[in-house]
Length: 196
Image (cartoon, rainbow, N blue to C red; front, side, top):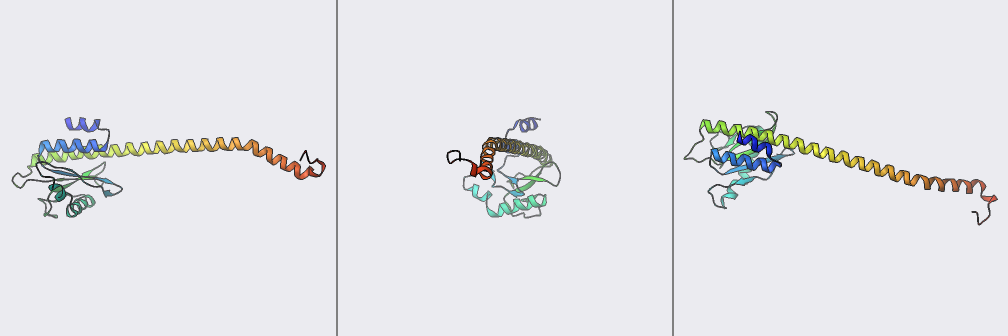
């Protein structure tokens, strides 16, 4: 319940990610790597080091690790450490699903300790938290898309009003100029130079 409440209070996707990792690290104390998805691609990973030196940062963000996370993202299946798919990884990579079982919105990597395996209860709890995270990220995306649509609609209204205003302001002087030119054309020979 605490996780759900915190995720619902989050204002940004980074808050959702940070909350998710904090809650997961309470269940299983390990370094975690979070890949958010945008435009059907994984973004740069956010790494939450736990009891590792800064040099470990590069191990978790290597091209090999990114490739395994990408595989998990594209296939919607877990991969990496403790699995039969690319087991040479430093982490177990789990896809995070959004509103539907086919929409992966992120991937998380857990650096599972070989001395402490992931127990079934912990695993189920982690999956449950990741489901809540996926729902929260999907809601955040929908809200962001709605905001963008509202901003675009507002900008279109402003543009239409500006064009209407410019058109109205130019119409009267242009009508006067056009009328005067028409008079000069038809009656020009009857007018004096001063009148012209």
